[in-house]
Image (cartoon, rainbow, N blue to C red; front, side, top):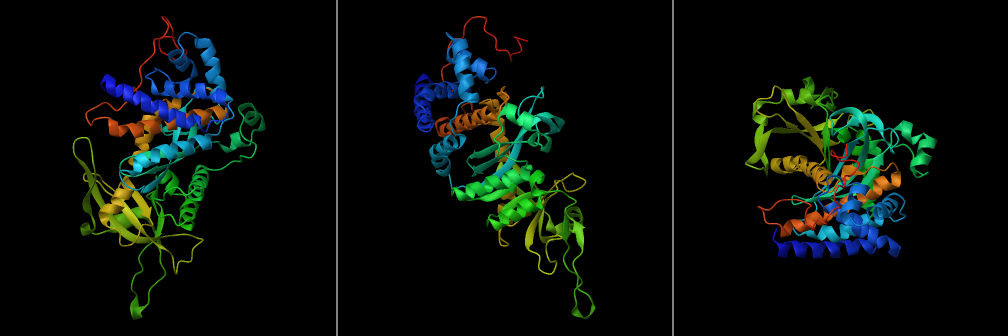
Length: 419
């Protein structure tokens, strides 16, 4: 980006942050907000409070550190109001490329060494792909083919954490919060999104959430279609077979994998869904109308859904399964597009962590954890808005602002050199 382009981007960023200032409350919060957002946008080694203090106020690092630490960890400003302002400023940019078509439910994890930060527990860590000491946050994003934006974000507390009054008090967990599973948190976020009138879309879930029948039922009650990943052993009502004298027997439940393996060769089709870095992404799919086996549903009249199955060439068996309540007349390509649009949330988290430091927060409290995430989402929203100003060959980076000089010899505590 040339100097002129950088100057224009800096001016747009200043105007964007002033929009956030308008909802932050007390006037004395304006400067630390500007500085914190600026720190998130600069190419610091780590985007925790101390190194951001060094790059935003190199002449008075200690005082700036205390100011940012209080602002992010103790500040009484509202995450909800800031995120609402981000939506108001960023959503028009996304919708210029088409209407919102999807709501994406997911979670992200942050490996941790200590035991004292809010919500840290030995649990499944997606970033590491195994059980580990980490924090996990559940989110809801709205998306179309052009971009996506997180609109709700909440730390998950294990049952042990949620019921530990001492740890809750030390980390400032709100007293009204009780233990909820990740699918329950996700459904609360979806209900909230309906209540505030966000543009609706098909809800996309991976198998970690899609296997939860109560979550799927809740989405249907809200009149939201879904494409939900499921496990291969999910039980379905098989098609009824014709018996003698024109009668039909009762449905019998078989697994999604059994359904897939019983399909004829002609049921499988090669489908392309998105242009990748070098070529179109494609795989082999089949779809069939099924009914989910449920003890709470009368087998005589179960609701029909799509079962979408992916079986890539060269694999010994199908690799992915989805249930969908999209219309019966939806095209094969559109059904696959819906299932595969979940890739956007993976790009969200990649950019939120690599570009604006979502996982760099080093505080221990509930408020600071969510304040940091809110401002990371705000910074990411600005990057979405700037996409149209960056040429296709240009770098996609948060380094859109000039980097201030840092005092000679400074090393943040989290840096490799300091260690």
